[in-house]
Length: 417
Ligand SMILES: *[C@@H]1O[C@H](CO)[C@@H](O)[C@H](O)[C@H]1NC(C)=O
Ligand SMILES: *[C@@H]1O[C@H](CO)[C@@H](O)[C@H](O)[C@H]1NC(C)=O
Ligand SMILES: *[C@@H]1O[C@H](CO)[C@@H](O)[C@H](O)[C@H]1NC(C)=O
Image 1: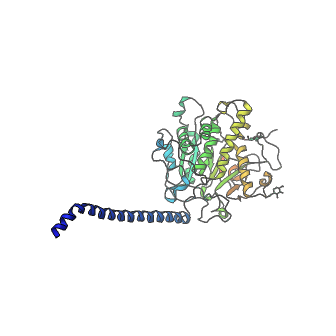
Image 2 (image 1 turned 180 degrees about the vertical axis):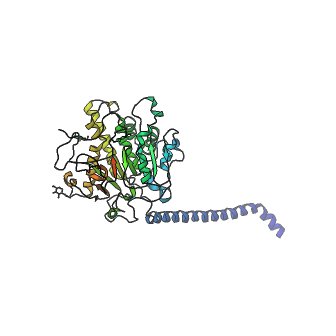
Image 3 (image 1 turned 120 degrees about the vertical axis):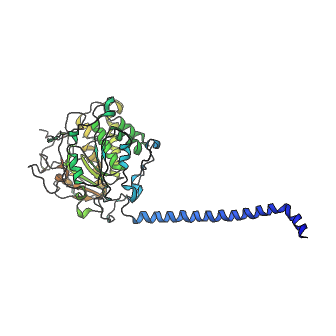
């Protein structure tokens, strides 16, 4: 019987076994799938909490930049959304990636990561603006040194070390900050990596009519993508960056701007179209602030306007006067954009004269505005302290060497008489 059974059963045994095995396998796969779903859910929930609780990580920028157009070119690069990396990687030497990848990109000193951020005392902003930019200035310092000429030798351009004679003040005042001198190659790579998805930005950067305008655009792009402090090479650090945001604004400030010119009761000045003008020789910012998106839009718009006025494609714009430069990429354009941003935050600001005669730093939304001596001491106007002393509220001194300007003209402002 058993023999018979075996005989009968034996042909079907493999099938039964298979059936049995495949059901076991199904159950096995089911368990695995369930475990994976649990794991994914846990990761998602944990990730959500982690982002919500970890005050040292940046909130991703509202309009996350698209991935670089040519990701292969930048092996090991941090992703295009530096804000999204969280605490552990936020200060990863992203900057060394794009400067080091070109062998000749210049001296990049990467100092230790202090992890500290200016103006971030781990408090959430109480009067948070309607977009989320993590307050605080990441510990990065940027300077730009681009070759003046358009000739082939620009690839090998090396600056006269004297031009960087003020840079040690920045290093000494700000230990553990990451310092990057962005050169020709590093600048191109950076723009390609972070803004390569936007052909207009790439084209504008590549074909800027002169090196000053190129440097202007690059600083906005650097601060937009990476944050930190941009400062011209002819500036001297007078106070540590950690002290720039007044204590009462810490944890609320995402951008620091300074006044360069305040007409007050004085005469009009050459090339100054605003009663109060902001400087862009030094700017501090948290990455992803919309004021830089707006500024980049303004630059692109102005280039189109200039092309129309000159009757040539913008790539063929050559001789621009100094006001055209200032009003397309420079301080006049920057002032329009910053002022519009401040008005967005505070609709009682109706006239830029509202910022005239400022004596103390003010906070509008998440933007700190410094009075004239903050970034603009030592100038013979605007009631800037210009008696050879350094006032206590002076953070930066601008020497107006105009070293990186394509033309000989300095950007220093002059009375119109
Ligand atoms: C910049 O200007 C200052 C003051 O005019 C001068 O002392 C300094 O040597 C200049 N630096 C360079 C690199 O030209
Ligand atoms: C500055 O540029 C803007 C934008 O291109 C333009 O609307 C404005 O008229 C210019 N300002 C002056 C004083 O020309
Ligand atoms: C700005 O100036 C206008 C005109 O003088 C004034 O009415 C307004 O109150 C000022 N706003 C602020 C915030 O000071």
